[in-house]
Length: 221
Image (cartoon, rainbow, N blue to C red):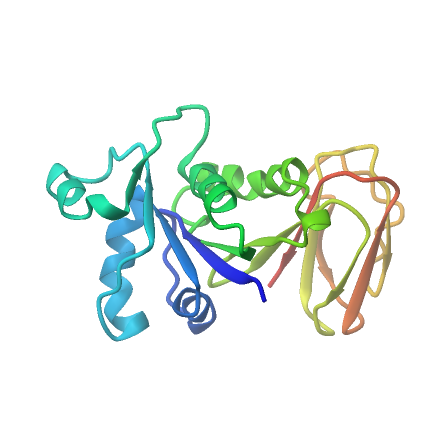
């Protein structure tokens, strides 16, 4: 059975139980360097004790020299300026934990809108560039308010009737035939981010049929 990894980013740290449950039950935990303090401060309420992550990764500009020395055995310095810390953490998990089949990203949203948009859009690149669906690896962003998943082809989702759903894609040539949504997506042209937002599931299961392999995001409340 595959293992689950959690990546902790330096956005809004969750206070609700579901994302904290995901953190508590992770087999592998990787913190972006800026999120290390948040994770450690939340340890008592999440685990009932202090618990170190498996890895802290980034350019280390957010960690004092004292902490770098104290926690040197779990710190990975990645000075790549062409990627953000979320991507560094994701790449590290993919390269060093081959047994992981599920990756949950926590703290990727909130606080700064530009960071939120950047982090969320990167999900599509991960799914496409690493061919996650063909490898049986799932990735999502989870917060107190939503779950966001990347989609590269036709998909069926067990989401529950009445659940709020938004679909985003930067591919204006993509056509999506939808089944189980209150407002069908068949005539939507994905030439702006708002075009398929604020929908709702009419059935427990929805199906999105892609005209061709592409990149998109599904956001569930």
